[in-house]
Length: 415
Ligand code: EPZ
View 1 (cartoon, rainbow, N blue to C red):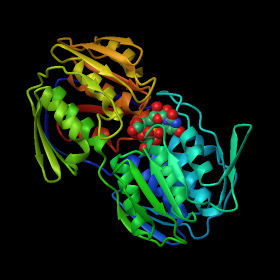
View 2: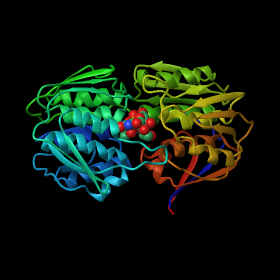
View 3: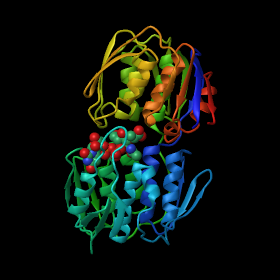
View 4: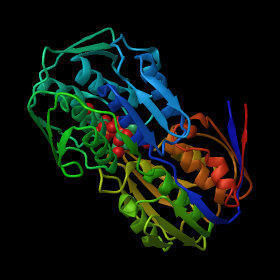
């Protein structure tokens, strides 16, 4: 298995360009299944999860060219039993809403949990049922089918990102109006709605807690550029805060990472906001604060592991409260191997900052946990080896190249 070998202590200097958003391009790729025409998607990050999603679209018969952009035509797709490949990424469950919207029938493996939590899909299924779809679960495969999809009132008990996206995908060509209440507000929802609206869908309220979808008969091919990845941007901002130095991070929509900017300022990191960039300056000495993850626009759960890592070497004590996922502290055991002083009680971690972290052999346990270990390794004394970096490759495009270009000592060792 590949690993990263990182020698800590270098200050980050220079500039980093942020790639397109993983969590935006995945639902948009699923949405192309609804469109019997050619779509061109720009600013696509070259990530494992994107390649997996492209393979899944090809499995259903999509014609895909993936070079600088993705050119995709789903005119001749056909409904099929689920491919085993869907088990490689949870976001494949977004295919359900699109295939249901296109064919009024779909069968899919029920997704199991993952390292960060049980991750049920009950709210997705509740939405499909409100739209009139029957559901039969047998031997781990769920069959969802109906003669017609009719608009309805969907209340999401939790503002689930995936459930919001899946209900939109099923509703855009349903008969009549669908109202999704208490829906997710994340920027990736807005990007999906923008893409579908360009294609002729009638969607209003994206970015608020109530989305209205009026069904249309068909959608047309469009060209769309994916928003920048706010979590990649936040991750690099924390890397600079930890090592010290100054770095301009380009292709950033500062509104999307406001909680990260404000929390870093609380930690006495200097952040200057520009039109489509942030400039981070830090002397490497940060002051710990408290973090509580919440659905957007609250503090993003996808940045929790990275902040926990940063605070491991901050002054004072920080309390981290993870309210979104029930098991998102897997990185803490690995940070402790580097000398971190963190106590976990349920969904709360008490981080007592230490003077130094020491390089060690550690393993990524999930995508953001892997990013957290990189942040700590960059400011630790000595050398750190991070295993299981395939998790990291799922969400960060060429991270070792981007970090090496700003002065970090990081190498990928093919295993
Ligand atoms: C999306 O996952 C993101 N993934 C996650 O990013 C992100 O952490 C999460 O949203 C929250 O922001 C993609 O967009 C591909 P949820 P999703 O449904 O849609 C519960 C990363 O690191 N829930 O908003 O799966 C669920 O158990 C990944 O890039 C139900 O109870 O997240 C969880 O506790 C990790 N029933 C909470 O809602 C449901 O039917 C949030 O889940 C659905 C969700």
